[in-house]
Amino acid sequence: MNSVSDAKMKEIILEKYMFSEDFVNDLSYEDLQKYYKNSYQILNSTKTETYFKFEYDMSDPEDPKEISQTKATKIEYELSLNQPAIQTKSSNGYDCIQENWLKLETYISKTSSTEGNVSARFHWLKVPRNERADDVFSIGLNSNFSPVPGSESAYFQYETKGKGETTTKDLGTPATKRDIGGYAYIMDTWSLLYPYYPRFGPTADEITTRGYMQYDFIANNSVATVIDAYSHYAHQIKGKYVSVSVSIPLGGSLSISSSEKFDIMTGHAQLKW
Image (cartoon, rainbow, N blue to C red):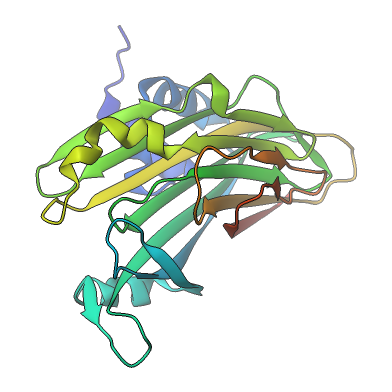
């Protein structure tokens, strides 16, 4: 049995990797152990947090329609917590509007002169009911660094607010997509949440979803002076059971080929090498 308590491991991880407390609390036991084991090798770390605001037309609660998507600040999100979830607006042609907020965290840690780890976390802070899609979550690197095959892992979670219920779901084998510029996970949120959707009627509690991914990287040349990590969250606006082709070319950008539209939100962290 490990002589170090989970609480102590989390304390050290928070200090070394600069993760948010929510991120550390979401870690699987396997990833908690991995981060702790490698924490004593950390030479430097950095992080960024990015917020995105969405507005949905909720005239038909069974079919939310996106109206807008903008980058926002943490202060703007915190101010929104005091606002009604649904507002009546007749002047713009919509009967009711509901906000949807996504938080995207991006992290880089250096463990040696040639190696390190990238991590990212997404958190849907406010989500219209009956939201369902095939979403894509990925981290890409600049061309001086390459992912280490087999080091990747990820987790998807949801929480029904009000009842205090939390269930953790492993993303599973079908989600993984390796490419020359990074790794991605295709998240079938509808299949994961389907058993619980009958409860989500007009009086149901709010549901939030969140998840994280991570992998190790290595420098692929001796002239690297900085590493860039690009976290991407691609949200499918409508449709289901469509073929989604994902690629992350050298340089870390995300490319999606699909017949349906995606909103792509991007976070960026940079660390001097």
